[in-house]
Image (cartoon, one colour):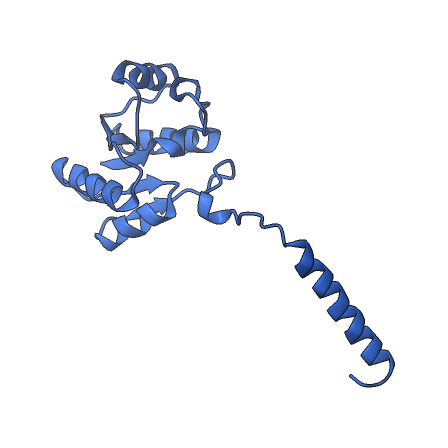
Length: 157
C-alpha cells in the first residue's frame, strides 16, 4: 500500500477544512490510484475532528483505503508510525511526503520513499532569519573598507 502524507495533497492553510488541494499532488494520487487499484493510504500529521477530514477527502475525491492521524510533527515519530502502518497492511510500499527529514528516516528504516518538493511549502529550516547588524558594526566595516581602498590607492596593499 502506498502511503501519502496529507501535505502532498493539500496546500498549507490556517484552517484544516479550508486547505486547497495541491494540483500536482492530486494528479499523483489519481495516477497511482488507477495503477494500484485504490490501495492508497493517507496519513495526517495533526488532524482535526475525523468528520472534517472525511469531508475534505470526500469533497476532493480522495478515496483512501486507510487514513490515519499520526498525532505528531516530529520526523522520527512520524517515520516510525508510518513504518508500523505499512507493516500492519502487509507490505513496505512507497511513502510520499514533503518533509525531507521524515523521508530520510523512512528510507533508513528500509521503506522506499518519495520526497515531493512542493514550491508552496517553505520549510522553516530553509529560511534564514534576518539579523540586523548593530550600527557600530556597520560604521566599523565602512571605515575598514575605506582604509583598505586608501591603502590600495597609495600602493600599500
